[in-house]
Image 1: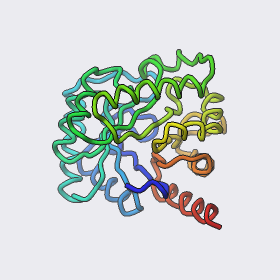
Image 2: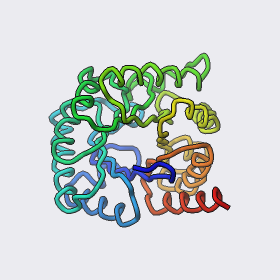
Image 3: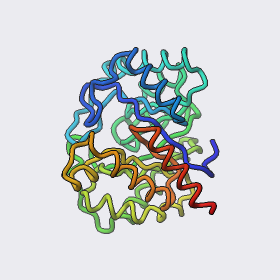
Image 4: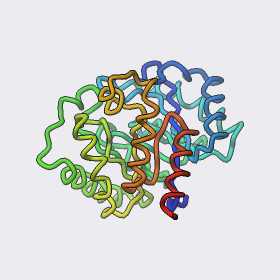
Length: 266
């Protein structure tokens, strides 16, 4: 995948409790039609998640997660076999099963801290790995927002984890600074402003800003009213060096990326 132009990752939550679209796509048919919509709108990657990572969410069982994601991955690969599917999971077994049936990227919010077998498993599977920064777990991450220096601490975390990934023979790495995961609203904006600081790591940078509380709480609106704010921050993220936008609204994100490219090359 060529990251000289921005890529858009469409979010497909097959969960009952995600903060924005929980319950909308937790059936195989509804998930398949949403995947079709996002692909038609230009999604470069579909990110399938069977466990909510909203603040306060609990880690679900592996069997429950498999029951949610496996039928959806199978259905998408059967109908749209050229799709790049990312599996959003913290569990090695889920990653392994999803890759065996067609997923080609593992997106791990935990940096391998929840299931110690996940990173070695990804190394064995020889697929790209999305490394995200998070303090704690979803159920307690918002109680852990103290940093000596926000950007430096996150960068140091990523450097140490990248070495661990190399030791596991994982070479294709995408980094995600983890907007909203163990950060206050103000810290999220500092992170966005300083996004270029992560270019020193020399890996593609993914940002997940779509309809998050840093937008809707600050604007005093609901998540379903936060598309305009999301698009504004997507443009800023691209200007500051983001390579991948992880989004709920593919068409609008592709429009932002197109306008940014016009601006960049004018």
